[in-house]
Image (cartoon, rainbow, N blue to C red):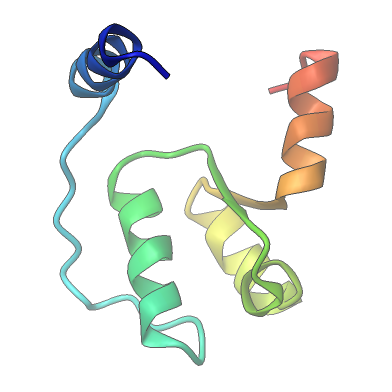
Length: 88
């Protein structure tokens, strides 16, 4: 990437991101680092948490609890499929 493309990308991130500070109060996963990711998604109002981590996408109870909070946990492949067909 050129310097100009990198600068444009960084400007885009600044314009379209929301700064979220997790509290550490969400405890759904065995891995505390994963809990921070999930809490960030929830607090930030994300519709999706996209991950390759089987601890997240393979835990049906965790997936259901996140869905009840308005966040759908998806694999990268499933997210890209939805993006491609325009169902996001």
